[in-house]
Length: 422
Picture 1 (tube, rainbow, N blue to C red):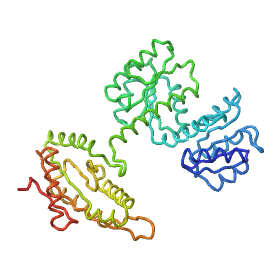
Picture 2: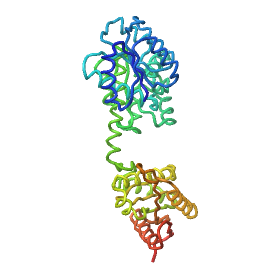
Picture 3: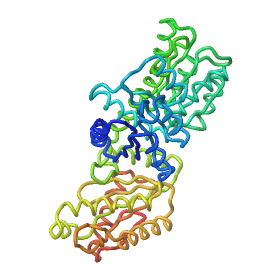
Picture 4: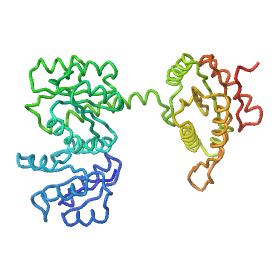
């Protein structure tokens, strides 16, 4: 993430920049005046993902820096020592992402989380549901300032149709009082398909009593906002907190299901995921292809170059496998240097071609291990079986036997069968 900070105090600017760089793990460019900012933006057109702006500069005392930066389509955050009603009105009038008060380390933590959120939001879809075109536009415009991708619907029925076409939507913001289907009923229907850790729902209503809030929450909403007391600050906090919650849940799930080194599924989760694929294939009478893969002479790599290089080899192999698989099936690290691939609906000839191509791709991929070493090249042995009736355990057992045969026959090859070997 490329960030520009504009702060008229070189001392405080350098302190803030250093602390933020540590929090974000990225470098930040610093300007101390309006003119210096103009010069930087002229040289770095389209370079910055976000800007942190002081409103009072030596050559621009009235916040002129804000429209300048926004003119370059850079999301702006105001970082100021004083927040008056005049400052708030200025900030929201110019559609900045948010304002942050210069106070203590918690301000920097909030600023860092805001910058991370902006970076993530470019890939996040939110659905706004309201029968008022005016309110839809107001909410959509606020969300777009935060770099979110916005979809809209005028009632609950249209919202369900939009969700059917866009299942990756992460949040629904819905009014209560709408024709055809109200917001509470929409929430109940959405919860039949999407859990709280998949989709956040924020209810909105002009009927701002406690009963309405309770109705939304009990129906599955994560949060509730009253239209009459609608403030951009509160709105952004609620949206960002709910999106952060979804991110945290996703990270926890990933940590529980992924191998920490390669990013592939771990052995435990693989048996759950692959078993579902096998069961579904059996129901529609599709063949299932299972491949067990092992790196040839991997111990020699560790003994010669060290385990750190061995880790690089495992990571590179995982990248090659993902690139070859292209989402056709599931791949997991079973332990050590052994991996398993399960693909459904692929016939015998295509399965054979796929694993031979994978074997060749691994052998032809140089692996940069750093230092003065020449790039490494590794090979793999693969045992494969194709069946329309065998269980996952049986598929793995037979593929493992074929893997043993591949090693016995000289390695760097694929041994495949359509039924278990004698």
